Image (cartoon, rainbow, N blue to C red; front, side):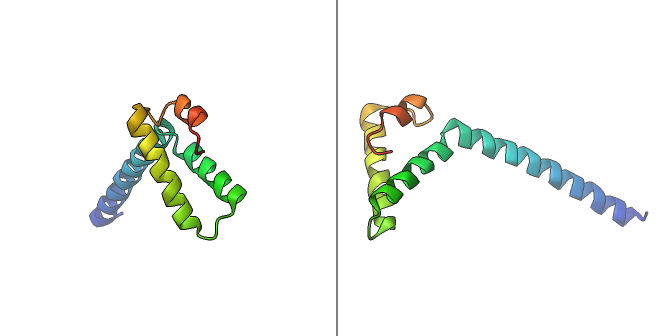
Length: 88
């Protein structure tokens, strides 16, 4: 194996390791803020209500959620947010 091939192999290994760390951080972030549950709730709503303009509907619902979170000082990562929110 040439020196340049070995160097490329080491760089590729470092990139894979960095990607693994980044994926772990992303996964932890998504779990902490309950992103999957939030979007599942929004999707249930849009499917149930079937608005003519789903993008506008999402925007309106997210605005309501944001206002509720800010006014009530709710941590969106808490299970309380998901169970008490009137919007999802």
